[in-house]
Length: 279
Ligand SMILES: Nc1ncnc2c1ncn2[C@@H]1O[C@H](COP(=O)(O)OP(=O)(O)OP(=O)(O)O)[C@@H](O)[C@H]1O
Ligand SMILES: [Mg+2]
Image (cartoon, rainbow, N blue to C red; front, side):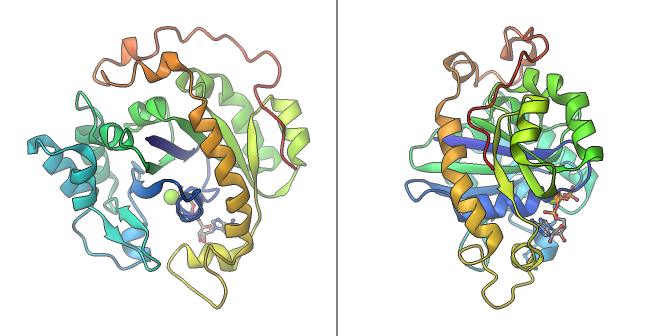
């Protein structure tokens, strides 16, 4: 019933890592499926030594032909990570990835959207870095929650400040996760007017396990990163349930992006869009 899109605006703040952590710590009522939609190419295949197929490319090819129901189709193209998380791995190359995403996301009703409507299902999509011409924009716009990751440093936050108005136009559900040390969460929320869901610590061991380099007690059930995400995940789930009805009703005709957001005229953000900033 839920589609969550994670992405960055600049740099590599840990989107792929956070996507797996969020899926691993998603509240128990829904079953997560991770879909690697990074237009720059995927990392899961190499990090976890997965097979080349099935994955995003085979899903895109099948979605063109198959009449099967979204979730059934999606499941056929997953592989399991150690620990059992089902993932649709993206191809390593940008060209292949963009081609697959183009096919998958510009279909009239994307298989990902129809799969995400299924009860008890959450699709957690790693959308990589988003740009105005990104092939993942339809997904970003349709997501029940758009989660942007950023480090809380001057350079990263300058990019956030420069692009926040555009992001809000893409999705009213946009919210942020801060990564690592830097400015205090409340200060970032107040200064930039961001809805901040929480903060992920710098945790090389915990992140390593989510990149296919497990060490003792480093899994998302034990690591500092996993424990932080366990607190953040219910907030994101709540945020996703609050998706405005106007967006909900416009999910299907993805091929017609002009009408997808009837009004993008939200103007500059007037004060914080955040709920309670999380320290
Ligand atoms: N919270 C964290 N603490 C420490 N290291 C991290 C954390 N998150 C990610 N990393 C490390 O940073 C590197 C990049 O992480 P990841 O691939 O998740 O970033 P990304 O934003 O998806 O990058 P890209 O834009 O290249 O896809 C990896 O080596 C990962 O282990
Ligand atoms: Mg990534």
